[in-house]
Length: 242
Image (cartoon, rainbow, N blue to C red):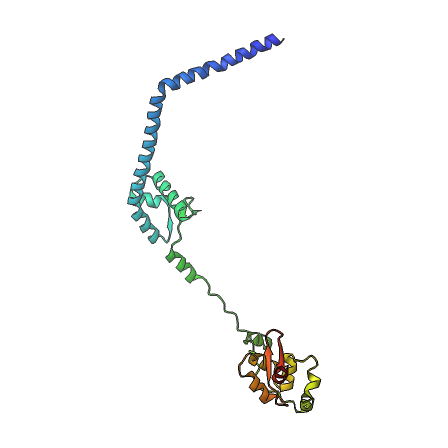
């Protein structure tokens, strides 16, 4: 059984081998002629494309004239009659132009095909003939909307003025010993003692004239100095004694 199978496979291989061998022999003996034929076919195709492009350049003025006269509508019959050439050539030309400019193809009432090209003048006439857009009535601006449209109010900078608190003046003028529990005052405590804003003390603390300025504001006439290391204020009299 196996021998018969092997014989059948061998015959099938021979049947396939014979035409393959003839094909190889044919290609080896005729490859030069086939190469020449292929090159001739490519050259002829390129020549035809060149001739077609040159012919299209001659037909373009006729095509443009028909587009202007017919408001963008043209049929292969119109082009063939105007240019005096056959219908298939006119249809091929219009198909290329439709693909180039994105024209639409419509069926006319007579059963023919109409190519519709949109130009700027045609689009303008379409827009002019359309109905005008209705204007919406102006809505009154509500108070809420007006408040949203108004720019935000800018916060006024804190004026560099002294605090006027006559009711707490006696409390500010308490004895220096009761205030200097830790031997110094922080910024808010010194501002309260000098009866000024804390931001005023912050702005003036590194000023060389700060001691004289603080002396003029201090209820006991004491000059104060700022320590960058401790971030606290010390009385000059206390520093001189120490």
